[in-house]
Image 1: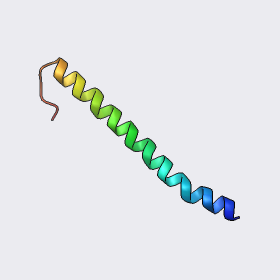
Image 2: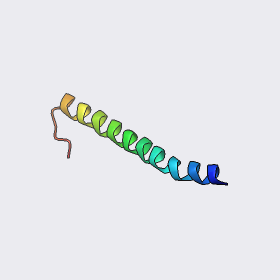
Image 3: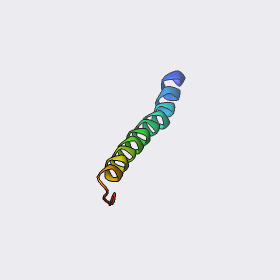
Length: 42
């Protein structure tokens, strides 16, 4: 039971990191496209 609780507690930082990486990749991709088209990001 302790191992299961440990896994449960440790999985949240990994999921959060995954979502953060996904968001950062999308923003970087959008920024590159905006520069390519000579327009602002926002």
